[in-house]
Image 1 (cartoon, rainbow, N blue to C red):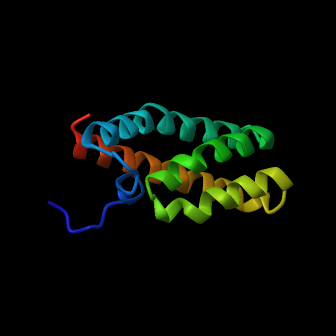
Image 2: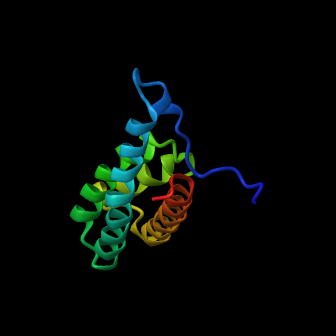
Image 3: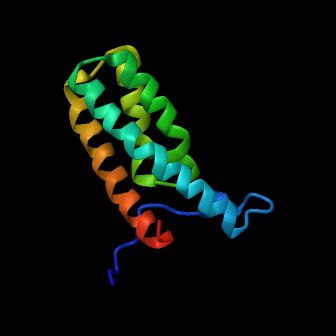
Length: 117
């Protein structure tokens, strides 16, 4: 057992009326089925310097990151989204994309373990 804090929180989901265990499990399943693939697409788009795709993928991921309170990515995903949109500070974007990818992979493993999915 680890003493490290979780990378995600269910706080926002628990604030939703009628958020029962089934609902939360469904949201986590949707996250696991989509967001890791989005993170892979984000890396690929960044490697290809396809800033339009980077922008749209980051924008799409942002809602899931916020919903599951992956707070260490709150600012990072917004910075990547803005950098890609404005094509500024692109010398920093690859490190940020890789950070996002790694956190999403770790969070997904944590959720899969926590929910036995």
